Image (cartoon, rainbow, N blue to C red; front, side, top):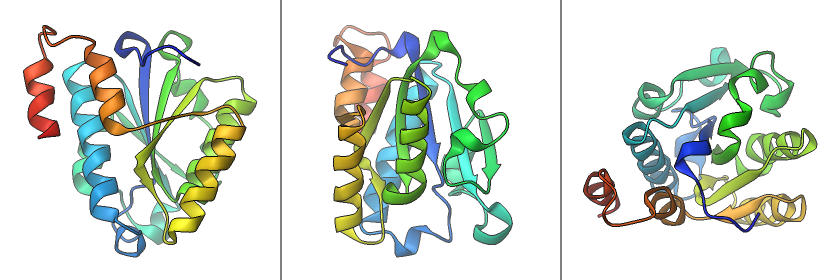
Length: 179
């Protein structure tokens, strides 16, 4: 992929940003803050937001602010969300610019990215909106996702590409989320 992120074709996927997991994640406050920036901007632009929660009976719910912004949250036991019934059905072809954030980068995020790529889906992995307990695991997940064809982006890349221009009617609203 060499094109810009396209808000009219985007779906935001937020993988397993669960309350009980966050204290163990390296720089979790930044990961959650960036996921929230993405989700709040997605809401401004009416971009669908699909969340997942790994073993919610054991790990509990997603961070409340994240959960509230998701259009749907799919509980799952498989690390690869694509293996869960109903997940792929939430990803409509007309919204095929898949933007992925979440935790843990080297487990559920990576396996979901690889699953999406296996299904021929275009994936942009938001490097500063994913996390792992150990930074090296996150770095290796980024390298492996890129090698599998996922495009690495940052939160601000996505937000500004969704806007395209300072004259976008929601630009000032988005800018408040960045500052």
